[in-house]
Length: 323
Image 1 (tube, one colour):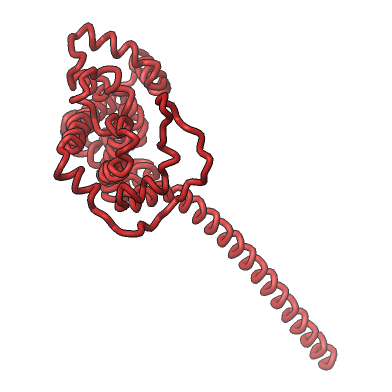
Image 2 (image 1 turned 30 degrees about the horizontal axis):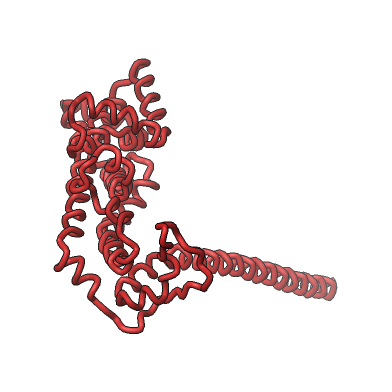
């Protein structure tokens, strides 16, 4: 009987060892497949990142090329015929990422010799910064109103905000032009500021974000004697800090690259931002275009790098109390 039990225990141990070995093999296979999927996804993301970054790298590196080198590499692309039209490109364009000789002549011309570029740059700053600041202020107040006070009329107004936000700017450009003409603010910065400040984009995003704040927090503050202003300033705004920063980044990038609004609402070329002026650089100033484009990319990149954490937080955080 003891011998039978001993043999049975030996068989059980052998079976258990085989089971453990089978489990380990399956685990290794799963880990290998997971590693393979992760490697493929990483390689694909790396390829897409390289493709997206190539134009930026090409712009930055080509801004340090001399005018003669740029003409030798890309002259066929920007050449024009005697009638003013584009010519047929019969030769291959030489895309170069490393200049033969680093030259700062383009930046010297842009920053020191030709103040027109810097003047257009400050036009962009003057047009965009007030829109970002005051659109956030208007959106914060409107979002708090849509969050705290519900009603059929307010829901209808909020639905109209959504419809206006879904419309492309080209659809509302003619009404904006007519309203600006009626207010006699055409060819002034107000024609750009007012539609931007009262844009529904920030109101919609901030309202959806603010409505995720638990109502119990606001009710508890009311029981403690807090008024509407204190609830707005001490509860809603601190909890919406990430959303405000992420919305500010999106607004800044959107209006920093605007083209249609200044072209239609500002007939005076002296008031145009640099985004419009870049499209009007002559074919013989392609080197300057690279340098100006590089300088023009610096503020959005700095804003994004500074507010990257806030941008991610504003997108992923659902509101309420963090644990």
